[in-house]
Length: 258
Image 1 (tube, helix red, strand yellow):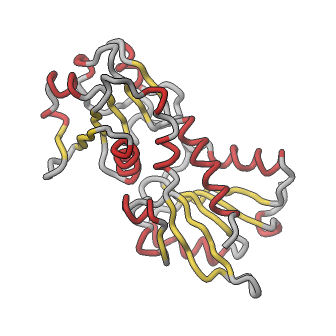
Image 2 (tube, helix red, strand yellow; image 1 turned 30 degrees about the horizontal axis):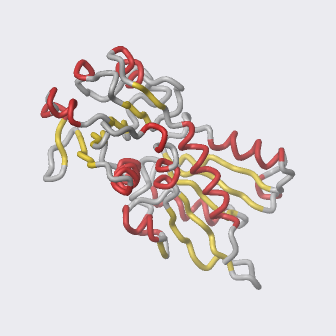
């Protein structure tokens, strides 16, 4: 693979840590298979302020994905947001808009492809009894999931380790609450490789075969959250389909005409 600076277009991922991510391999295999003069790089940055250093170092950078913990923190560094990103308050795709004559980028625009990616994975798992959801987590991924579920008529209750006006804490979850909420979504990073021996502190014993337990994590393929849920008969699903769908949307956003 040639030097990134020699490629026509550079794309990448910002987040911390990134050891779990499949995006680099996915995009670089796509570029090679389709003979696209581009390369995808993981930019593991410890502070969101380092984004501008990345941009300065790679003048051929034309698009970025954003993952935890920067989906919300990146917003003040952007020039504009699309409607979904503005509504949700989280960004997972950055498009570099350039001047047609000089080639200099003139605007950083944030998008949210997580919403559409998640929404397109749920029609087959929504049943008449699954009308309410518990979403574990309150970060950018949880915001996207919440928006997608509510657009499909699903009532959502957020769960977090910290109590707030709009969230429950795990200790408050009762058998009756779990019985009412037949969709459980893990939108936290708990259980992500390499820390795959942990999971949210959820009362799994209250689950039944009527429940759908959806983990946005895709590495490992079966998380501890999914294993514990399956032990009590729940249907489980991981985040690989959502990852692929939002990746396709990312490339469409990066390459669309102004």
